[in-house]
Length: 300
Image (cartoon, rainbow, N blue to C red; front, side):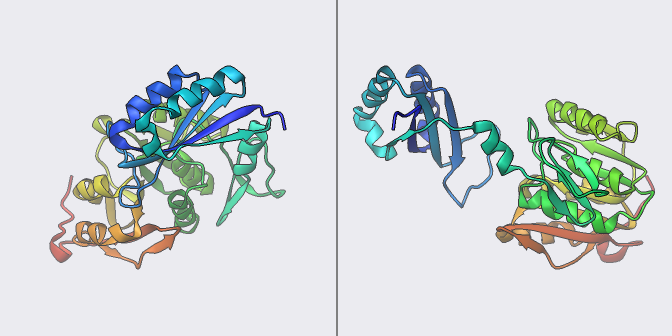
């Protein structure tokens, strides 16, 4: 086989990650991908590195590129990274990406990229993987979509806190919600959500805001697919967004993080047993009425 690519695989501690990536780029790497390799720290935090990082670097399969790879591996420090070099044939990367994102059904709704087809007459949300989190392929998004398929009956106002690509807010609108507000700390995510809403014909019903610009009001349905730590911190804020008897869906947490979320939200909500998938959890709660369990429903 005449390879088209050299693929270099590494296992790199977080402390070395920036330097290793700089060396790979200097050696001519065409693409570099890092994935966490530590189950105790599965979520990336902006400005920090995972304790261990499994990486793949692609180089065009030339003699010069192989010499540069061998020069890196000749360094004593690089032996710690368990390097492996593999020759790869030319591949249709576009086809592989598309195969990884087929049309998927979540209750009443199908999420479909532009290259796939859904059944005739299916309720369809058109969405391609892109610059913001949320395609339906991750367990947490799937659990939230299934929740919305059950919870949205028609005419609701919905808050999607940490909206990313806007998939959950757009799904709620397609399922029959009247309006939705998507909140995210990332302006790029809000831009992507706006584009996705336009593609799905619901841009006039979707409102978007940074957290500091969000106006406090109550909703019958709130979804927040973020991470466990910010969900704990946001518990009082999100509780104030749910009307008495309204529902909240919380995801982005690992199974072992459930007790943290249960403790944070129990003063405000009657919580169902968690739904779990692939090590991730969804918690659904109904907002207490009155002053039950120390959770007053004061007026705004």
